[in-house]
Image 1 (cartoon, rainbow, N blue to C red):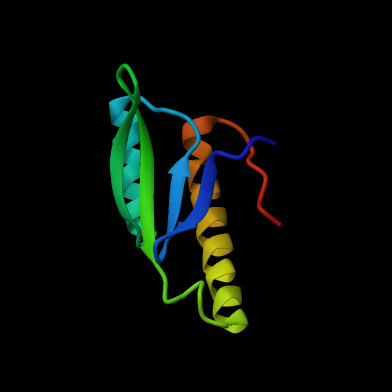
Image 2: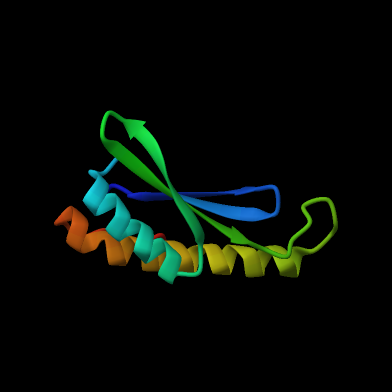
Length: 101
């Protein structure tokens, strides 16, 4: 199954992004879902009249310090949030989404 959310670590945050663009009305509904998950979110233009949703989760992790247990916590936060977003996007995509596990 295709993933509809990607995530990566950048500058002390996990960034969650939709992999496709959405019409403005749908993009705003998805933006609300991202915000309800505790992400600081915004819409970015992807193509003419299509928007990608991007959400930021600040994490307490320094990649230059030895902190394996902290990294595990970051991975756990990422997995839980990404799974929740994928599941909440189902009504907008009309298909069953796979999980990250």
